[in-house]
Length: 272
Image (cartoon, rainbow, N blue to C red; front, side, top):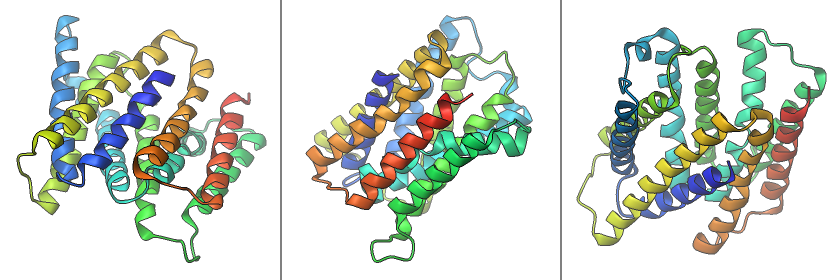
């Protein structure tokens, strides 16, 4: 799980860097096609259909829609705002899932977990700074991405049990490519990158695929309750990379908000 989070953090870093030269939608399309090819080949080698008919079920269509929204808004947030703030807000996803599971699936959520959700929401507000001088409407992109990813995770619970992680990977990268096509269709401007841009796109794609594969391995071989808290290492990697590469210096409110989100998430995930 830690390796997966490192891979995703480097993926975000490379995406932010290459978005200065190449449209972010174009990068997402390339990543989506490459990821589909890798996971589709893995499915075929396992004797499975890369995209079986089950992906057209209502739950999977809902999952796909949420995946598109999450990917689209997260990529835009990475490209247009700071890496550290976007990564911090993304850590609230498990808390949104907890609240969503209670509302949509009727899961019993104890008061302690609801308090954790509330504290995590307070942390997000501290990062956003609504009504203050430091507020930027672009920061809401990260919030929209977080809601999309939470919806994807909730819809996965209702997904057909027969779908393998390889098939889910193929579908996930297909939705990434579709989200990129939507952005590219809106902004236009696709062009062949230079050598440096091509290298960054290759790195973004490679680390994204490797991170997804490591995440799948972690969730399949380890106890979910044991490995899930290590998702928060992504924020540590993002803060370090943002400072070293982009000279980001998060203010005290952002750091405090990130700490609240992580603490609330760890509390919410470990409470029974």
